[in-house]
Image (cartoon, helix red, strand yellow):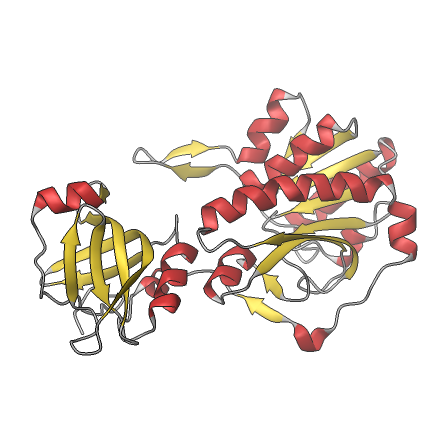
Length: 329
C-alpha cells in the first residue's frame, strides 16, 4: 500500500520499520519537531525522523494541524497534496502527539489507522502502558483502530493480546508492545477490507483515561500494601521513577521485588534488613518490599551490593513520604 506514517517515539519507529520491512511504500512521514535533549540541550530528531531519514523518506514536522490557524491550514493542504500526488491509501498513526482533525482523517481513501498500546476501550489516552501496570492488569495488548475525531474512541479493527508479567516494568512492557504493534498493523493491512467490514464499536462504559504521568505520582506512600508499591515502582520505570525520603535525603527507587518477610508490628516504611539482596522495608499491610536499586541525589543508581557497601542506611530507620516539593511528611 501507499502509506503516510505519523509517529514520534521509539514505539512508533518500531512500527514504521515493520511496515518498511513488509514492503509498503511510505510516501511521507509526519513527526514532532526536533526537541532539545541532553545536558547540552541540542536539538534532537525523533526516533521516527531518524529512521525515515535513513530510508530517504520525506519528513514533515508541523507544530500542529489545526485548521483555525494559517500554519495548520498549510499543513493540511500539504497532506492533501501528498495524498493526491502519491495515491495514498491510508495513514498509519502511532504515538504521534498531535490531534488529527476530521478533515485529515477523511483524506486517505481507507482513512487513518491508529496503533494503540491497550486492549481498547480499557485505557484511552497518553499513558496506557504505565496505567496498566499501576492498575495491576494481568494483560494488555495492541488495538488497531479506525480513527475518528474522539480520543481513542474509533472502531476496533484488530487486537493482539499480551500477558503482563509480574516482573514487567513500563520499559520492558513498552518494548514487547512495540514489536507486537508492528506485527499487528502489518497483519491488519494484509486483510484490511475484511477488518473494516467487521469492525467493532467500543463500549464507552468500559473506558478509562490513561492520563500522562507526573513526577508527583512517584511519591511512595509506605502505608500502602506491598503489591501496590511494587506496581508503582515498576510502572514508573524508567520515568518519572518512584521516590522516597530518609532524613534529608530523597532517594529514587529504580527497582524492587516483593519479599517474603513480614512483620505485624512496626512502622510502615521501616527498614527491616539490609544485605546483599537489597533493603527490606515494611509496608502498610505488614508485608515487605525489597529495594534492589536506589539512587541518592547527585549520584548514580546503586545495586543491592553497592547499597550495602555504601553504609548510608541502617536497620530500624524509617523511610518517609515526600510531597512534590521535596518536603517530608
